[in-house]
Image (cartoon, rainbow, N blue to C red; front, side):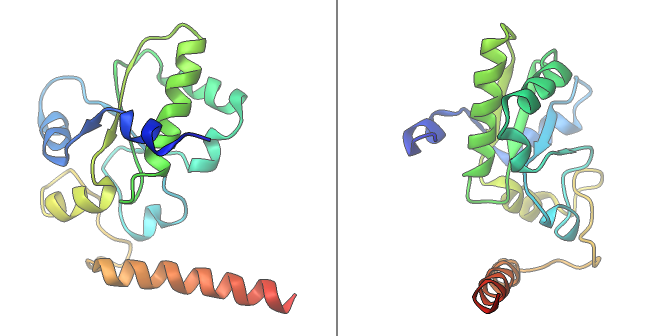
Length: 159
């Protein structure tokens, strides 16, 4: 398990720099969205690869991703906003790429999808709309997550 220092050591890219890279004529970075079930509900960065964080648990699965994306020189991982899953998955990718002798430039989106969407949801071609076609506040997103956690806890205590 990576330490907090390990997670902080992964290079970051700002929402503004990522947006500029996506809007440029240069080769776009590969965007790896490691969120789980909220990918469609809350929208996502256009053309992002949705690979839930569980995908990064087994070496063989990560090795397959290194084979798929390792030739790309610019890969950006992100999660929702807390910056735990994104850096953890990025570290796993970096570790397995290094073991395979693959050199690539891996970064994590600072502030995660929440920050990116807040800044660029109105920019054409950067963020897909929310499933419900309306913007949700952070309070609504947190409430949704807490409600699901409470429901799961209640289900586990009644089983």
